[in-house]
Length: 349
Ligand SMILES: *[C@@H]1O[C@H](CO)[C@@H](O)[C@H](O)[C@H]1NC(C)=O
Ligand SMILES: *[C@@H]1O[C@H](CO)[C@@H](O)[C@H](O)[C@H]1NC(C)=O
Ligand SMILES: *[C@@H]1O[C@H](CO)[C@@H](O)[C@H](O)[C@H]1NC(C)=O
Image (cartoon, rainbow, N blue to C red):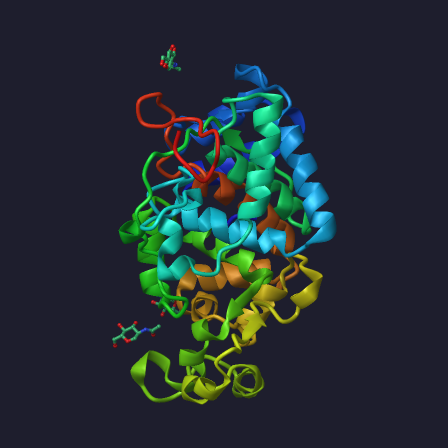
């Protein structure tokens, strides 16, 4: 049951996209309801000589996942860091002294090794055809599925950007207010449904204490803890994340916490993330802020399955399929003149 807050066209797109998962048809038309789409469904199979590109990616991601389940959270963050900054152009993958990956917000990114490995396979199987931007999007899709998320069709045909500058990185603080977070998403052509849904990626993964200590000791420069966090949970977190001033003596330590202690080392996507928000037990401020916007609050109730007549976690899985395609569509490059197919994801050709 979709609620009033979604435009009718968008709701229709969700439904048609879901049907398309089964029959593989009508997908372009469905997404076309929202905006002209430059990407194509099954681009590699239908429009290139690299018919099995998606299968090659899935195989490599599965091999990696079998050894290291932290890869899903890493790829989700890598993709977000790429798409929200100058679009899904693989600019986050470029090496260089002033590249995006050198920005402070990107200090703890991972997953580059898997992308390199997939690219190596692609350059052997079908040289010069599959872009790094598509590899990142496809690999993330497959890793999400392995972690208990949905499986969904992904539009492809991106080309890789030729520049990457740390100065363009505008990723916001983890303690951002719901209002500022929504403004940020909207500035990237996404909406409140995308925000509430994509944040569910924080059901897995870890974060440095540096992203949490302000909430525990000096929220928004008030000298007090974040009033939206349960006292009991704050007490618990303080044991792992000491006051920054107390960390000086223990310099080699770089304490971290699970973004969602309920999922923790299982690395399974689930709706405990939304349940924790309702219980005021979110780790990051931006996650707790889901309760402070009427639309995201309603979606949080829905995804947490607090009401039997709502969509519950299945609703989240369906929305994620749509929102991942919408995020993957931000400022994509599809022209010869603006983008290339990199031979090595770390360098322009
Ligand atoms: C922090 O304070 C500023 C100024 O009072 C306010 O605009 C902002 O929304 C606050 N941030 C949060 C996360 O509450
Ligand atoms: C949010 O919901 C509350 C309570 O139902 C209402 O008073 C308020 O006006 C709503 N805010 C917006 C921006 O719609
Ligand atoms: C891309 O550029 C090459 C020449 O460099 C040209 O042969 C090819 O047709 C172009 N492809 C597209 C899709 O425009």
